[in-house]
Structures are given as structure tokens and as C-alpha cells.
Image (cartoon, rainbow, N blue to C red; front, side):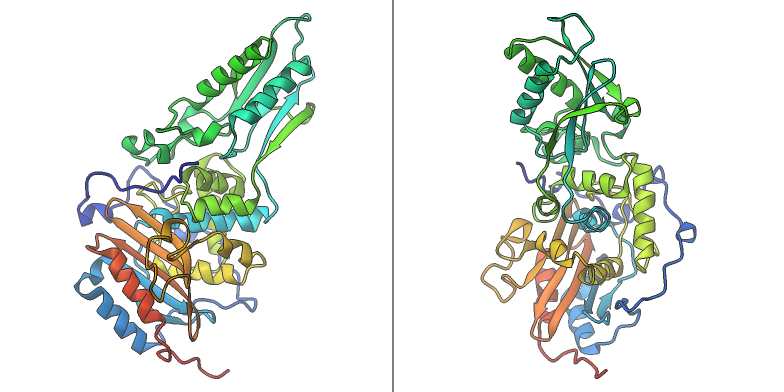
Length: 423
């Protein structure tokens, strides 16, 4: 499978363009969100910087570019050790996936799998429903064809065509609103549909996934000696309560799905996880639920705006304090091990495999990268001699962001800078 890593566009936007929010994308006012619950024994991110020595070193690392950076460093107790513009909301690129995967893991659990199902309706016709399995493939389609032929699958006389309905979302929901038209043509910007062979991507994005599925399924049924009348129907017509389940194909487990999103930065998978995790394939509803979920975790929400599940939409806005607070929360989560196991690893795996290899950071930092034109972000957990550190660094317009982030991580590993106060 193609990794779907966010690639920079060929042009670079001016810094002021990076800071503008698309006026056509509705924002969610912080006042409309539920009040965060009181702490219940879990560490909360503290608002004040408590380690002047590290703060000085982080400021030195960004130098004259401090205006384009948001950086926050916290320890496992929630102490904010260093912070540069940590409350300033910026375009996060694929660091957005940290939210989608956290919500999916929290609400669906570590054993969840996406499922594609074949149903027989009371009139004898068949329906195929899906949940966006990113690995749905031709071999599975062949099994659906064989089972459709073997089931009768039609109210027509024997020998007549099998009647199959493909249940799908309307076209206006296939792409998040703010995805650039050029991105939509690329494999990493493929449309988000419930029935998606090979994540709706070949060398480039498949522009009409239901049409492709319709053609390939009909061709396979014909190859197996049958005929079919296949049509697309809206998801509102799916009727599974009175239908009989004939067969289902299940995706890889949640660990594989989370790893696709976080280690490989696969956009399609992260978009599906947001929709399934929030319980809605209406993206406007999904983003409202996501914002509410973040708020109920007790996270700092000022300026935050969730627009999509992958970070390809430039209307997203996150702060480094929000990202550090989220990682602090997930470190205390019952499924914390599942969350961290899905991340890229510096010098070793995923989108971090080529960064800091052979250095003191090799194997000691795991997290999520993000890259779109003019934006570079890396957030994750760092092993240090003084315990773990949660680090988030988001730049909108930095000159050499990887070098700066590497220096931030190295300074955060210096022992003895931030002694832990006695309880």
C-alpha cells in the first residue's frame, strides 16, 4: 500500500496566508463546547513554565524564527517545562492524525476492525455495505462475487441477473471541503468512501470509486459465469435490520489501522478512523464530536479547530499545548500502549526512519510527523535520563525545521535541567 505521506505542494504560501482560516469553514466556538470535567487524579497540563533552564535553551534553538514556531515540552506529571507560543494555533499538517487515532482508539477499542458486509434483502436482492476498509482488495471482491452468485441474489427467474446494491456516501462527502483540487488528484488525496478498493488509489487517486467498484464487480461476476444488475444507492437506503447477513470481510486490527495512520501517515485511514470513531460519516458532525471529545479530556481548546481527520485541510488549527496535553492524556489511557505502539520511531520506522539515525535520538523518540507546503510539525514522546518528555513542535514558515526540531529534542534530553520537585 502506498504510504499516503503528505507531500508538499510545488508552491510555498506566504506566512500571512498560513495564518488565515478559510472563512467558508465553520469554526466551533469554545463557549459552545461542554465544560471540561474536573481532574479525577490524572495529571493535567500546567499553564506556567516551570523549567527556566530548558526554556532558555529552547528559545536559543529557535533563535530569530520564534515567531513561526509553537513548541511545548512537558513531563509525565504535567509540568510545562518549556513553551514558545504554545497557545498560538497553527496549521498542524499530519499532527492532526494524533487526534483522529486517539478518538478512534478511545471510542472503538483496540480490538475493533472495519467490516465490509454482503446482505440479502427480503426481496432477494443483495446489498454491500462498508466502513472504509483501507485494505479492501480484488481477492475479497472475488469472494463477494462468488457468494453473490451462490446466494441466488435476485427475485428474477432462475438464470436472471443477480441484483446488487452498492451502498455509498454521496459524492459531496468524498473529500473534505478544504482539500485542494491538486491534492485530490494524487494518491495521498484519494476520495474517502465506504467501499474503497486499495484505498481508492493506484498511481493516482481514483476519481470515481463507486464506478470502479461497479465495473470490477460486474466483470468478476461475468468471469465466474453469471450476470448482475449492479447499481449505486445512498447510505440512507441501507436496511440491515430485516436483511440477512451472508458474508463479511474484516480489516486488519486496530493496531494495523492506527499504524497506517500514525507510522505511515496514511490519509485515507485517518479520515476513516475519525468518521468511525465519532460515529458519523457526515464530516461536519464528525468534527463537532471530535471537538467535544477533546474538550472533555480537559485540554486547552483556545484557537483549536478540527476540520478533517488527516491534516491535509489547511483549515485545521491546533496548538502545541493542545498536542502535548493530548499525549499526556493518552499516556494515562487504558490503551496507552496501543497508542504509542502505532507511532513512527526516530531513525528506525515510518516517517521518522530517516531522521536522526545514528544520533542520541535514534530509537528514543516516537511520534507523528506532519508536512504540507510551508508547514512542518513533529509531536511525540521522548526518552530522557530524567524520564519521558512530551514534545510538540509546529512550524508555519520555518527555514530548516528538521534541524530546529532535532535541537529541541536534544536539549530536552540534557540531564538535570529540570529536577523533579519532591512530593
